[in-house]
Amino acid sequence: MSGLFDNDEEEVKETPSASIEYQEGKKNGFKNLVNESFTAMQTSFDYLLKTIENNPDRIIFGVDKIIILGKLATYSIPLEGLIQRMRNPYAGGTGLNATTATFKGKLDGKETSVCIQPDHQNVANLPGCDVLDSYFLMLLNDDKFIQQERHSPLRHALLNLYGLSASPASAAFKEFLNASMEATYIPEESAVEIKGTNGWKWKMSDGNPLVPGYTIWFKKPRQRAWKKVVQDTTEFEYGYHYDDVFSILELLSDSPRVLVEDETYASDGYFRKMVAPHYSPLEKRVIADEKDARESAES
Image (cartoon, rainbow, N blue to C red; front, side, top):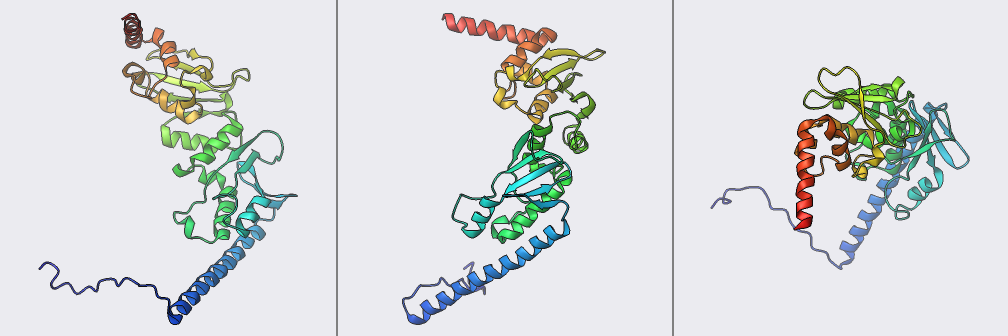
């Protein structure tokens, strides 16, 4: 009886038909949908052209690429793949081709790949030129978008490009690291400092050109000078977990606590051994673990 007085009409399920009237109506509906998509594409293309025309000194054309002069870096978008995707959306996979980022104002030298998506939740429903227009505007305003949590690929790309040394991206990195991790970025030292647990402080740097990874120092409570504990983070046992600034800072922010408690995938064996001589609870844990391993191997 619960639905006896329910006046909402039930949705009627459409039944396909081979009749001329039904087929003609479906064909006209298809034509209208395609024409509407063409109209939307033309409108979005007009907006894209307006963005290009409004930024003649920052959106420029090379031989086979569109070059976006961002505020933090220079971005190159290959034209061939871009036009192919618009001409035939079924060719070449999905999404935008990877964009190449180089130093601000430069097209050659060190480069990195930028794989970011336009800032829309319903991107699948947008005309292609709307997506491209959004992408161009993001790169033009990279100093703003780099602060947004969801745009971590842009942050990683520019960190790979510039490292921790002073660069056009330094101010943006300083703001983001302070707001998101309470870390202090010191570009003139190519270093980042962050508070750990148990009163410890940590510092990491990529300032040594002979070290492919990062160098790490610590300070215990009431300790005045930094003590180097890791020369090169590429020596980490689980280096693939800690190959960028953000993942290492997350580890340091929870150390030395996590090194003692050794939560699954939360610490690194090499790092634990390096820190152990400087922290007695960790040293006891490492010795006990080594003893257990020997006994297990002998049994």
